[in-house]
Each structure stands twice: as C-alpha cells, then as structure tokens.
Image (cartoon, rainbow, N blue to C red; front, side, top):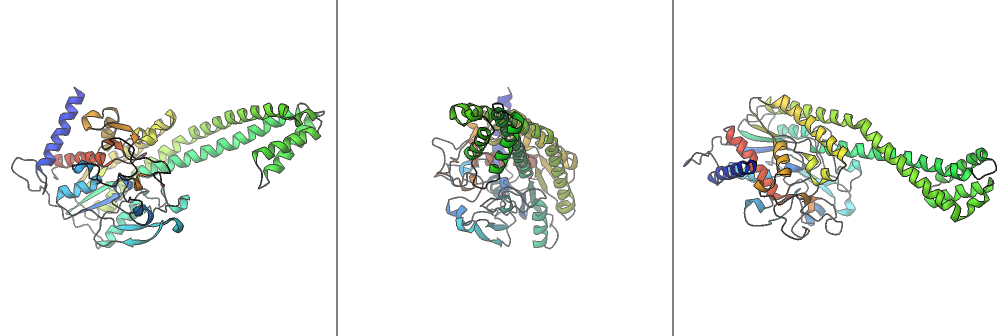
Amino acid sequence: MRQTKMALAVMAIAAVLAGCSGNSGKPDAGDQTLRVKFSSQVSFGDSLSDVGTYAVGTAKALGGGKFTVNGVTGTGPEFSGKIWLEHMAAQFGLPAPCAAMTGLDGDATKGFKVPVTTNAGCYGYAQGGARVTNPVGPGNKLTGSALGSLTVPVVQQVKNHLAAVGGKFKGDEIVFVMAGGNDLLFNLSALSAAATAAGTSAGATAFANSLIAQLAAGATNPQAAAQAIGLAMAAESANPAKTDASVVAAAVTAAAKAGNVAAASPAVYGPMVAKAQADATAAGTKAGSDYAAAHAAEQVVAMATAGKELVAIVKNQILTNGAKYVTVNNLPDVSTTPSGLGQSAANQQLILAMVKAFNDELDKGLNGVDNVLLVDVYSTSRDQATNPDPYGLTNVKETACDLSAAKNPLGSSLVCNLNNLKTGDVGRYSFADDVHPTPYNHWLLARFVAEKMVVKRWL
C-alpha cells in the first residue's frame, strides 16, 4: 500500500509539472499562468546547488564542472545533466542559472589555479565545499587540497549578493537556500583524523612497550635492559631516515648488548615483533574508538550551531533585507549515501544525530515563518534509500561514476562525465559519487521542491 501511494504521489507531481511545462504555472486545468512571476532566481549553498563555480581549468578540461554526472545520459529532462536548480529556473520561465563566481585557488602545476571572476547578473552563489559560516570547507587549499575550492560560506554569499544588487532584495525573486552538508563532512573528517591520530599514538606506545618487555625479559638485568632498549628505540625513532625495520633493529641490538644474545636471531625476535604489532593494533583501535566516542557529542553540538547560524542568515540577512519568497531545503540523510554506508555502525548513528541536530534547528527557527518554505528533503531521502522503486531509482547504494584514479583523477563527481561512468545502465542510480546526486536524482529533487511550492501557492 505504501508503495502504491508513493507511486501515485510521484505521478501526481509529474502531472503537475507536465501541465506547467513551458511557462510553468498553476496546476489548474487550462491555466498555465504563473501564480507568482519571479523576476530572478537566487541561490545560496554548497555543491548540491553549485551551477558551475569550478567549471574552469583542469576541472573543465576533464569534462566536469558540476557535482553530478556532467553530460546528457539519456532522453528526457531527467537525464539532461542538469542539477535541481536548473530545472527550477526552467519551471519559472527564467534563464538558466549561472555561477556568481568562478575560479580555483589550487595547485597551478595541475591546472587548479584559475583567477577568480565575479560574473555580473549571475545569482548562483552556491559553491562546492561551502559551509554555513566557516570559510574553510572541504577542498579549500588550507586543508591541503590541490584543487583549491573557493568555499565562500553562505553568510558571505548573501553579503556578496546584497552588495551586487544595492543592499536589498526586490521582493519578487525566488531565493533558494540549501547548506550544512559540508559542515557535517568537515567536522566528521576532523573527528576521524583526530581519532586516527590518537589511535596511532596509542599504537606506537603499545608496540614499544610490548617489544621492550619481551626483549628485556631474556636479559641478565631485565630492568636495566628495558631502559637501554627504550632509549635505543627512542633515539632511532627521532632519526628522520628511520624505518620500522631500523627501529626494531636498534631495539634488538640494544637487547643483545644487555645480555639477551639470543634476541639477535630473527627466529627469536620475529615472533616478538609480531606480538608487539598485534598489541599495537588492539591498543590503537581501542584508543581511536574511545576518542571518537568521547568527542562525538561535540560534533552534534557543532551541527546544531550551524543550523542556528543558517536560521539567523535567513532571518537577518535575507528576510530582513526584503526577500518575500525563500525556500530552504533541510539536510538529506547523509548516513544513507555511499559515503555514509561505508562508515561503521557507530559513525552512521553519529551522522544521523548530526543531521537531526541541524534540521531540528531549521525546523525550530523557520517552520511557520512568513515568506519561508521549509522543504523536508531529509524524509524523502530516507524513503528513497529504503523504498527506491516508486521513485524509479535502480541503485541507491553505489556510485554511478567510476571514482578510481585511472578514470577520475579527483575521485569526485566534479569531473564525472560520460567517459568515466561505470559500465551498464547507471542513469537511474541515486548517487553520482559518494555524496552527490545523479542528474536523475536532481530531477526528483526539483519535482519534490516544486510540489511543495505548489502547495504553498508559489507555483
């Protein structure tokens, strides 16, 4: 029954949009005029709404430019290579959206250093890697990325638009806001890196302690031997040219000098090294997990803060400055993306908690606010993950793009195109890469947003 109802709902939306094709407009029979005639479309956010900020340099040369499958994958608008905002503009009878800013600030030797250009009359401010208020997002050069994504945050994107249009919205624009995903990915990556560092440190300590104890046990004076072996390992570890083998050799040599002559034999020290490695793995895994568990709550708080910040931007920068039609999409369920599915069960639960914290703040701050339409993309994304058939999705777990280095140098949908797709029919896959939708799924998103605008009587 659930699938039947969902299928009917999807068909109904399609019928509404088909009846509104061309100039778009009311779903009423025989009336194709717009309920609201928007003068322009303005969008703020991240890669899910980026209409071509990085379609320059090597990214463009590799056949990319948008974070989806770049290129026509079949017949029909759902396979056109467009993202959801491009479909929305067509629905309103507006020109195709263009990126307000283009360029890259990365490695010049790889073609990722392209002068930043501000494009007059282009109001697509969303950028891949952009966060809500923090200027350093995924792909930014300050993270060590060769790509050098600009990652202008949403708070600055809005300021840039106001500066370009005289400080005020006219009131007849349609404004789209969708952000927060990069705050989640950035914070999760930072937690993972810190947990890995904690695990690596604990593992190294456990390895040294285990090997020292084993080697010293066969010495004439175990206590003195342990001290000598420890000093030898520390000295070699400080050597810039050191290797794991050289550190072990230093320990074995020190043990032999301390009276454990047998330790010089690989047959003797080999099993000791193997046990020390096992001890290191166990200790490192535990330390990493303990660190992540101890700091997980901080990430949830950080996402709640980002949600509050986005609410403040919508209220204090967009609505206060005259916008009358503001559509805000909440965060989809990132735990059901290929990236999320590749995480541990504990991390998947953390991702869910982070998404919920962000979305709860949007709901508390924007639901019911005049001139705001809050669209629940989260619930739809969860339904697609568990009930894909009514949406026409054929795969909701794997990527349509071949992300191997040989096929995709960036490992990203930014340079995914018809030449580096996986074999077979991937047109109705949900995801282009680990987190970004295919053109088909962008089309589904556009239809969903349009349906909510119809209900709001904005379309």
